[in-house]
Length: 347
Image (cartoon, rainbow, N blue to C red; front, side, top):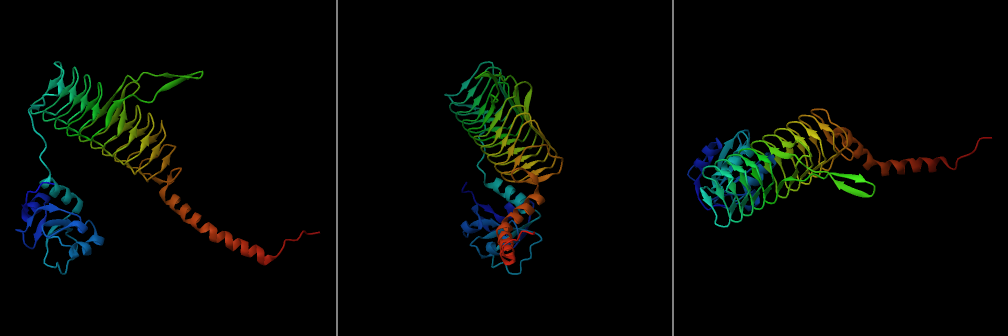
């Protein structure tokens, strides 16, 4: 984190918050409660953390306006409506500035037929293929790859060794983390006797604006047509999205999730870590899928499911509670049977 110091009042203004206490307190960094020192700003995302924040060494605390603080212990506060939103705004004040071109490292390879916009930054070892287009203010980090006729929208950041393969389209203001692969071949084979014949994967991948793809995540190109990720969707590290999958807008897909081919996912869907989705089903808008759930059938909009296999979340929890009670129930049945004595056969 950068060592630049900010007055607490400046950070409050960035967060749209209100100062209680000394707005001139110098803040060198933002830190979690357990790591804060007397030059740090910490935060309490909910009531459980307020007491810990007050007892910490932090100079100041970001808290909700609704938090009742009788004794601040000499600390200053930034009062906000939403602590997480305010924290994001404050952290941006400490964020290192992004590289800004025009710059092309001497070891980068830019095909003469590629089109490069204004103020593009192309770092060491990057490759840009024929017919590719980079819009204004794109950042290509070291070792990144942009294939033939690929398109990258304005202000998108491509981290080291991320790959955008041939004909794929990346929207504006996207972030592609290190080692992700956009447009690798889908897993398509036809069995002919004992042999597996590869099915050519001729489509592409299209990401909407403001999409983030995590490190080492793979988005496979379509067999024909397009694998698409809607605007505003955020995908974590180590996620597999298979060919011809359609993902809607503003979805959240957490680490180690796998989505099989031709599945259609609506808007605002949340998938927790290690979710598994079979192919050729539909997940409706606003669904929530719990961690490690295995979804084997289509889900109606607004469903909340969990478990293996996935079912209504409340039903899944009730069943898990009953399962924990089974040993005790079994002992009670055994005691009742023993109390009755040996069974008799009626004449």
